[in-house]
Amino acid sequence: MISKKLSIGYCSLSFMLAFLPLSVAYAQQDSTLNRTVVVENEYNPNIMDASKINVLPKVEEPAVVKKGIEYATVLRPVSAWSYESMSPITREWAMNKAKRGYLRAGYGNYGNVDFKAGYLWDITKNDRLQVGLSLDGMNGTLENWDGIDWKSRFYSTDFRFGYSHDFSKVSLDLGGGLGSQVFNYMPSPWSDVPLSGTDKQHHTLGDFHIGVSSRDESLPLQFRVQTGLKYFGIKYPLDYSKDADGGKEKIVHTEGDVWGKLSEGQRVGIQFEMDNLFYSSDSLMGNYTSLCLNPYYALEGDDWRLRVGAHVDWQSGEDSGIDVAPDVKAEYLFSDSYVLYLHALGGRRLNDYRRLNSFSPYWSLEGSVASTYVPLNATLGFKASPADGLWFHVFGGYRISKDELSCSLPAGVGYSYTYLLQDKAKTAYGGAELKYSYKDLVDFSVKGTFYSWTADHDNEDFFLATKPRLELNFRAEAKVMEGLKINAGYEYVQRKKYAIDGSGVIDNGSDIGLGNISNLSVGARYTFLKDLSVFGRVNNLLNKKYYYESGYPAEKLNVLAGLSLDF
Image (cartoon, rainbow, N blue to C red; front, side):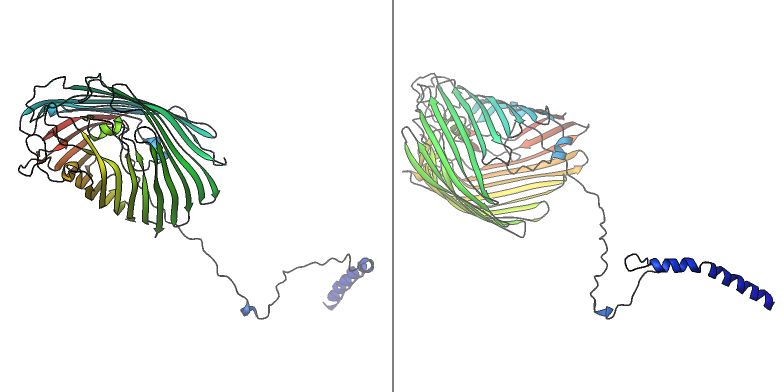
């Protein structure tokens, strides 16, 4: 056993001695430059005072809980471009889902007819065409001030179109329209004079415009310029028109805005507006030109906005001269959804045929009508949105105007025309507005405004007879069930009380007046097919007798029903 161990040891020693010359040769070639170190284990020394080293804690990625998002995708129909304040922003993704066409037709008592159609066509991603057509009217019997029946008719048609194209650096916009108003005048309730002439009237309105605006923010100056032509024609003679064939008004209207950035949040620019008005020889209005310039400086910070400018306006003709008014806006934003603002504004408002027609389609002229100028309209207000879908606005202010327009009382002889009065007027006003919406389930708004009017007219009561003292508007819509929505609205206008005698002159001995407007309405809409709906509404639910224009009665309780189609 011992001999066996000795033999194994001898063999091992012989094996090691055999490799000894190689080891000596390798050792002779080794140096600090070519030495090879073989590491068998990772170097892991102990660090002294390791407890003094600041070590960041391990940061875990936050876990986000994904929730479903519900969108309100109900869009308002394309309805011949009727103006609507504070319309909701339509997202691009929602517009792509919306129907492009809209058709509505309805009929009711008093011969009421309601027709609207519109279509929005995206020809390409850079070209868009939109068209709209509307017809509103009535043909029924109304009661005048003395309770005498009057066969009234009024039809208004309107066609509009618009086209836009986006180039690489600018956008082109052109459009226009054609409108018509056909109606008849009401005999004066106090007229003892045999009626002469005709009670018919036909207004023709037309306009066309073309505009260009910049869309490349790298340009040193940004701009928006538009020019066009407006037309207003009167077919039958107006009262006091000296048996003329009527009157025609043509306006070449140009407006624009040019601005440039001084730095981030600062810009300077000038807005301008020019109107060249031309009248036919049989009109009581004379030709004139109006030029309005509005240079401004705008500064915007993280939580505030400031605009400082001025209106410098010049006009030729009978009322030639230069007028100056402020254009100042200061707004402070806090808590992300609360805005406190102060505005001091002013400027000129042309009293062209379209503006007179907006007061009353039954208007007439006794002479030329000057432009209304506002030297100051100062407003202090507060806007807030404390919760999603909830918005309110509180405001108050003071307004001064030269050549303020007002409607006169009904004429004492002949047909009842709406004559226009002008004088310097002042008004203090204040009010509040509240809006709330929740998806497409509930949507309502209410607004009330108080006015305190004074005027320099010889007979202030006569001048302020049609001016409002209180305006109140309420609108609400609710989704009752899938496809069914109901709505309600209320309009109330309180006007200054006055009295007139049998010849239409102010007299404290009688008790006749325009009275207040009180119109309660309800309606419903039910979609029984995918895109086809039936609707109905009832106006003047309280069956009140009131007057919108001087002496012209509104319809009592009236009903209208029809169908609407989205396509």
